[in-house]
Length: 409
Image (cartoon, rainbow, N blue to C red):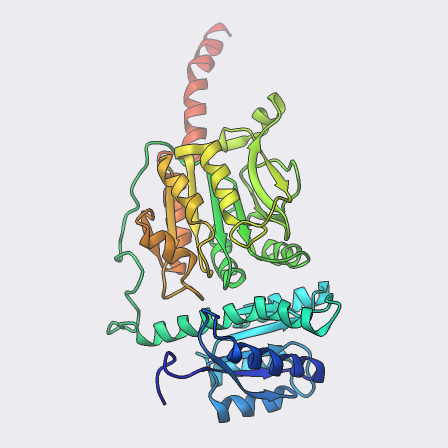
């Protein structure tokens, strides 16, 4: 069998709906006939009607990517995923999710169980052609990106201890210091993002001294469910952002689906008094402008606003995801003297967004997922007094006054 460039990508679809199986067959047939597509060739090598059939088909057909339904007879999608983590751990899995609150929560659980990405089922389209177009725009680029990423990881140079050196900074790297203390962290991510956030954010301490704003490419319902899920496992509060929300330490704001999020100016004295350790008054601004980089919310909107409002005091982190959203905004942060970090290839589900930033030469470090929290803590605390030091200074400042008072008594 030839390489992926020499043969079509082999896709297995598992869905108990005859309608969805028909859409899948037609989708890949149409893609095979489309000579103008820049995506690699793909073929539907098989369909499975339930979870048990799916596991048997994976072993028999050796697909490059599995498209998996959540609700199926005998074994549901989550049960299949748990089995695949043992039986076929390297197989990229894309979940097919219903665009409902229950579907969103189940999808997030699937991502935590090892699924690489998801697409929403075309439930609101008026006809078969619209449904197929919607699924095509969501599914085919994800298949191409995940298959390419899996192949690159298989071919990457592996060290004796089993870890890859591709796309990462050398061990023990010390992050360069900027001229200004960091007052805001902004994060952008897409494919593989929810799972990455579940590993990163719980490692940030409750006294993390600056606010955090995140753009994760996700539709409505999903971002609210993700914020709730992350809030349960983090020391910091995680909330879905809303218009005019105060940006201050202790809270992580997640951009809502279908709305761009920016950092805006605060509203005066009360904001300045309530700004806390960040020492700056700012609020969340949401808007419905046209998608940027085919995305709404778009990472670039957030990063541009952080560069504009915080300048050298902004830290932008670009994590796993396909495409180039965040590159221009990260460049703006870099040009204003701020810090830019990127996730490395080995720990990214898709090394697209962070690869663009790394290749542009604007990332001061490209780090494995497991090292990012430590890097953030190191950078935001550089030059910043700890609570204990602050208390010691306050006591020292009060000591002469006590001596005078004691002398008067």
